[in-house]
Length: 270
Image 1 (cartoon, helix red, strand yellow):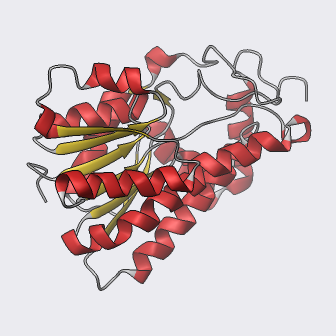
Image 2: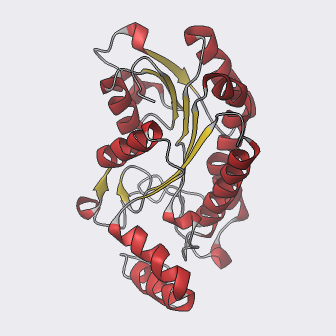
Image 3: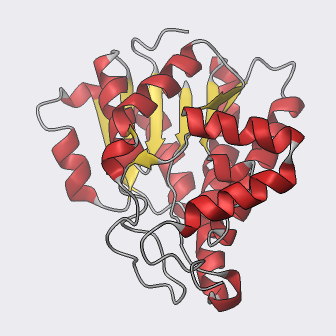
């Protein structure tokens, strides 16, 4: 499936991987629906783009009503949906023992329920077009990461949900892609939640050494075109999964050691 004139919905479209997905989709000739809570950044992204190529909708994916409206407005405008990319997400960094439970609830509401809501209302349209349902997950959806308990839980849940939907639709023509970037230079760490729910602020990692959002977006869209089942990105991510398959105990220690090196890591005192 080439993307020329296809209708693609991108949640979390205002920054990071979402922004890159919008820009790459437009470059490939798709019609794009941008969905995010912040209107101004999305308006900047589509500056200079022909109005018939996009639709911009303020959307909080943690709200079922917003997700339903997003799908309804997309159909009203373009008459079809070919690709839904559930990209909206929020992260965290704190020990579970110290984390306010509202933080984990927030992550589940955005990362998991946001994808469930959007997918529920888009599903009949995606089946009708023989389209693609995409979830932007993480290596944390395969391997639980210390100080990211809520984030890992939400991504494990997302992947289980998408796998179930895939199997249910083996005979409908629906394509389901689970995309798992490794650490990516994006806005997600700067907006990650601390143990009390406050915004973490500056990223604890060296963003310059990570895969760029633009590279991730290109690989995701290439996988949509190729109708791949799973996309695991970065050498580090692939190596983590390989070692974990055969030596899970060793992987636990390596992951702990790696994340404990972060500046101000909550793991350092343990």
